[in-house]
Image (cartoon, rainbow, N blue to C red):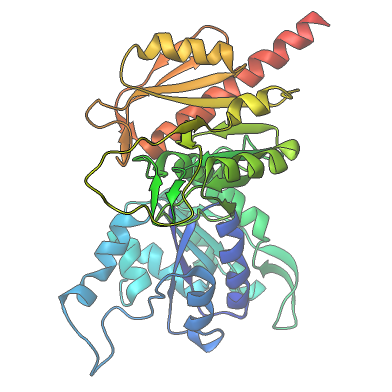
Length: 408
C-alpha cells in the first residue's frame, strides 16, 4: 500500500523522518509532499534518501525548470495512486486550509483531488490548538471523516506546557492502520516465506528453471509484514523489489533454498512455501560449457531436496502452507499433497488457466485446509489472494486453539 505523507512547517517536521521509517517497517511505500514552510525545518533530500521516492515540493515546476503538462497535473496522479493521505505534523494553517477547501499549494490541492482516507496529526502551540477557530476546523474535518490524532501534552518548543506536541509514532501508525482497516493479527509471529524460481546449473552458461516471477510469494511477504509479522523472505532470482520491512535472503538453487530455510525456520511460527522449486537438477553439472554438435545427448537428472517435507519432519507447533501448481486433477493432487507433506493448508491452482499461474498479476486458487474445507476463490489480484491466504491461516489457528482448550 502507498501512503502520501504531507509534512508542514513546524518544529516537529523532523519527527516525520522517523515516521517514514516506522511506516516502512509495516511494509508501506511512503511518498513525501512538503510545504514551503516544512522546507525551513528539514530538507527534501532527507526524505528522498529515507523513502526512496521522489519528494514533491511544488504544484508546478520551478520557474525556468521543466514546466510541462505532467508537472501541472501531478497532484491528480498522486491522488489516484495513494491509498491514504497522512499529514504529520499538521499545522493550524493546514487544518484551516483543509477545512475551508483552500487549494494554494500541492498538498492542499492533493487533498481536494483525493478520495483516499485522510489522517492528520496536529502539532502547534497550546494556545493555537485551543483557539476556537482551530477547534472549529478540527470538528469540520472530523465531520468529513478525517481522522485526527490529537496532540500530546507536555513541554513545547515555544517554552509553554500543554497540548500541542505531535502524537507519538505508535498512535499515528495505529490511526493509519485503523483508517486502512489493516488488521495487526500477525503481531508477534515470525513468518518465513519462500518465493520465486530456482536455477539448477547445467554448465557455466546454462541452467534449468521455470516461469515463476515470484509475485505471489512477494505479495504474501508484504501482506504478512503489514499485518504485524516479522517476515523472512527466502527468494530465488526475481526483478521484484523487497517489500518494506521484510528481511530477504537471496538464493539460486534448490539446495541453497533448502539450507536457508532450515537455518531460519526454527525461529518461525509460520512457514509459507510459495517458491517454484525445481523438482530435478542435473546429476553431474558440466564444469565447462557444453559445445554444440550434430549429435543428441542425454541429460541425467536427480531429485532436488523436498523443502516442505524436510520442515514437516520437525513441524512441532509450526503452521505450514504449501503451494501446488497443477495442470490437471487439481483437487485430487492438492489433497494428496496436504496429507503427504503434513501441511495445514495447500494453495492450489491450474497454472494453465487464463489469468492464473506464473508471471501474472492475478491468480485463481483453491485453498485446501486440514479441516476438510475447500475454499475456491475467483480470479483476483495476487495481493488479494495473499490476504485471503493469511485470513485462512488465522481461521485455522483459531479453530485449533479452541479445540485444544475444549480438550483440556
